[in-house]
Length: 365
Image 1: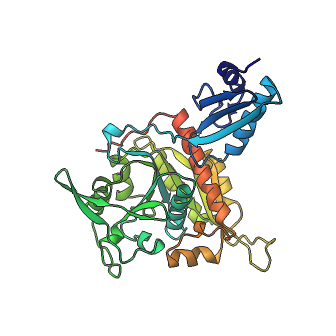
Image 2: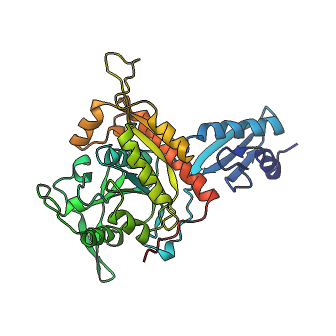
Image 3: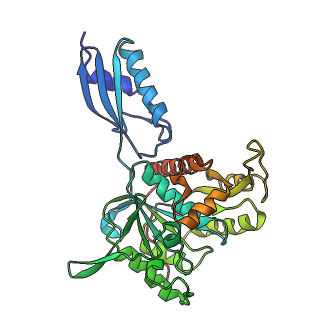
């Protein structure tokens, strides 16, 4: 008896999407079914190219067809992706951007910009279209971290307006206030000036269609953060901290700020940076210089995910100074940690978009 398309869909309706808790057919994740004598081929449309569960979903599909329609059938599963979004493009700047990820920290010195840069590059490595805005107005670091200190974006005219063309490096579209100022001079700006400069990066950038926009915020809680949530529908926030008590105290403030009733931006999770140190000559040893598992406790306190634990590795600092984020080095011991971080962030965004209402722009009088 020849297998029908309906039988294939019935079989695949037994495969659940682990995060969204619904079957693949109900979620419209199955397409392009092709049936030959002893072969069934179809595509599974994942919610992100960075899906950490792609191989388990593929195996589950093969098993479902073989278990329900016959073990002799050759099953070919093609994995594609269509990044989800619940932003409303017509109502906001960056209308072509599906998801906006703000990377925040309660205090400086915890490696927030390093996390933001490597997260953006890691997402791009999965095949996603990614942008990175350096919104750390007073201490922009993107020009150094991407070896673009002497570069400036191209300016083009479009519909009578000047538009900045983001610089493409390592698969990431980049804009930073650091491209327009003297790096040797301090930026002495009042809040409205800084907020105006940030809005220009949003509105004057020719960003086009992107799956993820990563925004590297300044440390703390201030004008720039309010400008962000008043200007854009932010998909979610990634909070970066070290496990040190003083850093976590400030990270707690950052979480609470975004969770305030008037702001109400979802927290995607916490990243524990500088989690431990492992000497090269003692690869099995871990030294918890700033405390052990502090951010795990913070994540449990707020009932949010711990997205990753990034160890202290000399190469992270060196690669940032050289302008080549360490996630590009597949031989590095922290390469996999940053890839896993990107997968976890993308996973949380997919869950957030499927289970929560769109973020609204904040109106603060």
